[in-house]
Length: 294
Image (tube, rainbow, N blue to C red):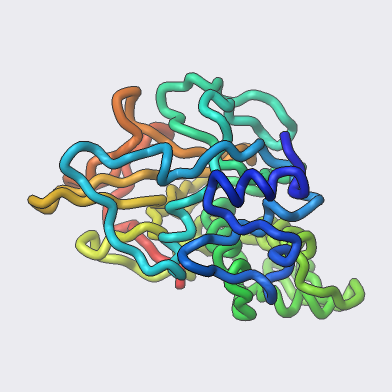
C-alpha cells in the first residue's frame, strides 16, 4: 500500500495523473493537455495500492476495434486513464481481508484508489466516488448527490460545517463543525457522509436514462433495491461494422477495492449485444437500466 504523498510522482509518470500537492484542493485542480488529475494520489491521508500503469495502457481494444473519441475534460476521459495497481493485486475488503485473489478469472485489475476504513464505499457509492472525483478534479462547486430520502447532499454545505443527521425517515442538515477549506481530505470525509445516506435507488433517481445507442464511458447500469447493484462503464471501443465492446468497473458489498471486471480469462472487454448486460457477480442488467450522471 502507498500513501498519497508517496504515490503521486509515479502516478504522474505512469498513469497520466497530475498529482501534485496543489491538486489536493478542488479549486486548484485542472486538466491540461489531456492529463487527468486524480487528487487522492496526492492526499497524504489516502491509503491505496501503488500505481504501476493505467487503464488505457494495460487494456488495448480487441483486434478491429478502436476506442471512441472523448473530450479531454469529460468523465469518460477521466475514467479511461484511471491509475491501476500491479497485475495480480487481490481485491481487499475495507478491513484488508482478501475477497478475490489476484488470479480471479473475473477480476482484470484493481484501481489504485482507497476504499476507506468503514463498510461504506460499496457499489452505488463507487459510481458516486468516481464521478465526484472527476468533478473535484475540475474545481466544480456544484458537487451534490441524492440521499435515499430524496434530500440532496451538496459539498458546499459540508464546507460550511453542516452535516446530515437523521430526522425521522429523512435527514436534515445541522451545523455541527467549523467551516473547512476544500482539501481532498475534507472532500473524502464528505464522500463518506454521502455514502452513509445514499443507495442504488437514490443513484438511479438522480441519474438520467440513456439510450443504448448513446452509450459512452461514464454511463452505468443500476438496479435499485435492498440489495441493488451498479456497474460503471469505464471505456467503449467500436468496430467499423458498428459492434461495440466495453470495459466495466465496480465496487461491491462489503466495501472493497474498486475493480475492473472481465467476462473470462480471454479478454477484459464485454460485448454490447442483446437486451441486457451480463456481468460476473449479478443478474443481467436490462439495457433500460442504463443511466448517466451530469
